[in-house]
Image (cartoon, rainbow, N blue to C red; front, top):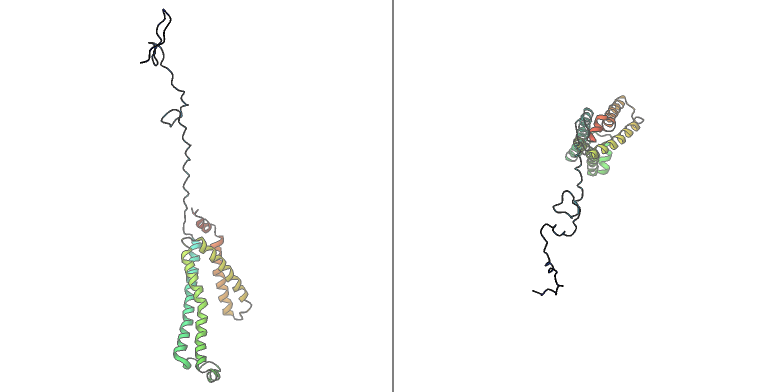
Length: 216
């Protein structure tokens, strides 16, 4: 222990370090930072404010009357088109199987048979196969769209709208080329069905809310 320095006569020795006389306040420590709620100790930085949870948006879909009618029209029409394509394929198979016997009633068959031989039979069968390709593709596409649009599917909905408008334009153009009453009736019925589908997919308020997920 180090010796204390000499003191003048009559004075008390100095207090050792860390000694506090009785009744006095304890020595103050280093200044503390301001207290903030949520901190375990004073002087810590406050926590960042927490973001409030966002409300969950619930989409509500509900099948509507016009959507159901449109689906029925699309699916039934697709099945009929596929059956027509299948019938064309069946005729082509019959021609290729039966050969010349399947074509002998065609006007001018003898001239074609003598000129082309078996090539004429093969060409006739290939024509019916080629005729079946386009309606078969159209029927399959319509059938798929008619099924998935009821989920509901916005992509299928807009594809149907575009195809429906194209079909209406083609049907209107066909009125000038049809010269029979039965053909006009078929076109009128076809146009009415296409307009029903277009109204259901594009204009019906309840169906539009259903596709937007806001059905009541």
